[in-house]
Structure formats: structure tokens, C-alpha cells
Length: 49
Image (cartoon, rainbow, N blue to C red; front, side, top):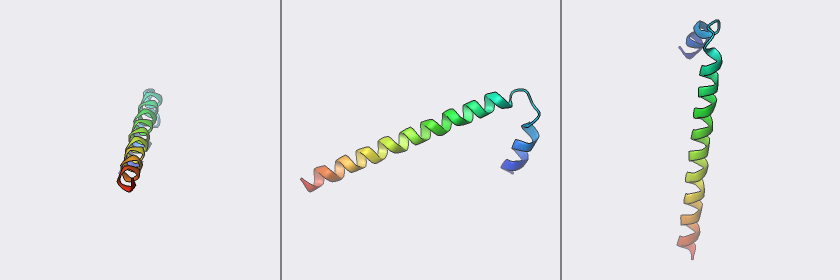
């Protein structure tokens, strides 16, 4: 289904904007996951202490 959507938008001029937006969302998700992992590690270290 996703492949069909990408194939359908491949020839549209706003594809570049969609790709930028997708990359931005991807970076945001990675950032959130990284922060969550850092917080989890900090909490584990506090429990050990």
C-alpha cells in the first residue's frame, strides 16, 4: 500500500516537500527515542545507587 502511494506521488512537484517532511518526522522520532533511552538509563543508574 505504501509503495503504491509513493509510486503515485513520484511524478508530482510536491514530492520533494513530502520527502523533507518525512525526514523531519523521522528525525523527530529518533530524537524522542534517544531522549527516552537516556532518561531510562538515568533512572536505572539512580536505582542502582
